[in-house]
Image 1 (cartoon, rainbow, N blue to C red):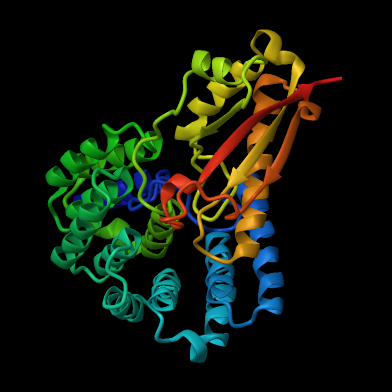
Image 2: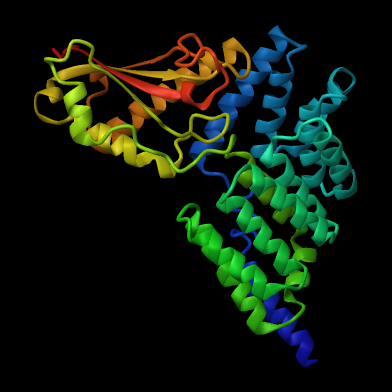
Length: 379
């Protein structure tokens, strides 16, 4: 009787922690849990890819983009239907197999999902998100040793990523090594990114360890689909592995390079967005804060500026053009909201992949940037 009461107490504690979702550093994908801004962005992206598919039905980037955004918005059944429609065309493509595998995991079909993801790893050997997803699927089947191997492979490709370290810590806890899981979660927390969600997971594990031996297993069985869905989307949205943002200029440097006496007043700054989205990442706002201070400093406060978005050459030219425009508009909106800069002083434009900084490496990270140019004085 005492044992039953202890387990019930654990479940009660865990019910308050479902938003933390043990294998995630982002909100779960169920509709209503995403923020209004995220849902709006997903809706716009879904509309874009639907239109693109009517124009280019054989474009795999459009198929995957539509399925991915449907999955992120919680419309998993629709994502599965889209992939089924194009199965005959793309069933041997590793990217298609990976996306279908993730959808199957979220739908609770973990066996098929893991099989598809493992097939994808035979065709794609450099995508850390694929191995992170595979680890989550293996965890759901209680194959913890294999799951840990998958997470470690992901970390070899994307070292020190707190999202994957978080998932690894959860996997260790699920396998019964709660103390080791706590140590790993503390390491994930030390990076300072996604810290609120990782701390929730760490607190949850600490409570589970202190309350009963079977609570972790009970939690997994009662909320398995939410754990998997959140874990997949949490790492998926991060996109390519990127280091901590390095600001290309401080406020004084920005002011100097945009000054009225400078002949070519243009700077390139690195701004990080959520994967395949125009949502700004929280850990990149520092550079935009510096930019906002520069644009409102001294005589620069009297000038207009062009805010230009640029992408790499991954994906279709049409999609990259649209994405660059939306990202430039997101920067303008942030500067307007945070620094009360008159939007009439900022001209948001997008150049897509048409002005690559490194034409020798068109897919390179250096090409993904925001360019700021001083124009004429504001009237």
